[in-house]
Image 1: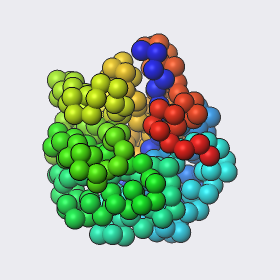
Image 2: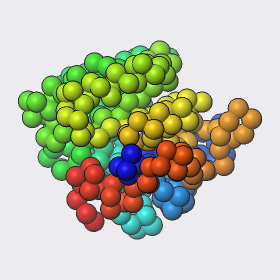
Image 3: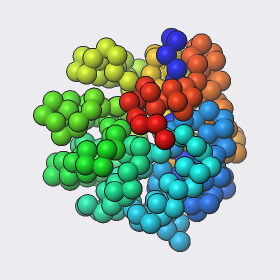
Image 4: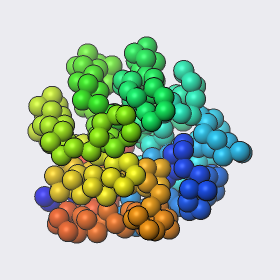
Length: 277
């Protein structure tokens, strides 16, 4: 358990609003300020979405460029991971920010159900997004909402569509997708190691009240952890989270509980094989 734990903070997402929690950062300036506090608390990856002037999710490359520039200025060394998620745009517009050459970008390699709709990731779009990431030297984080997504990532790695060994994130607790189940979680770890090697790095994210559960499972099992207001706006049943930093502090405390050092940004980049700034 001496492997440093990388903490990713998902700062905004596409769904949470100020009505859900006033601490949710919507504007670029709010996101930069919130991420800086989370970075100082111990997060070394910022998972980023952007919103338009009405607070709606968008894939606008200009907004992503402004956010990326601000994070690089105020959070020097932090890994910037931009979202290509489907709530923010359609078709190739979802990858319009990849020419900005962020350190990382999310990549969903298959479709699945979401609470009220199908999250569509057709094979031709997945292949195009992966090719753009390879072209611009952007490391993908494979978002696995289902076991089949891990196998698809393995297939894409084997045939060269994903050029480096994937960094896989298990997403559990989305309604109508994979529930939070410990046996499934352990099988995910086993499958990733079987397909990619025992020394493969992986991450886990839990949605809503399950965020704390997945943080604890990941940290105690030698993986890396995602937290943040995108996935969960509460500290507990009775209290809203006052900030992204507060959720990061909670993950840092869990690292202490399991004798896991928290990765510095230099260590996180080395672990993930990312270029130094």
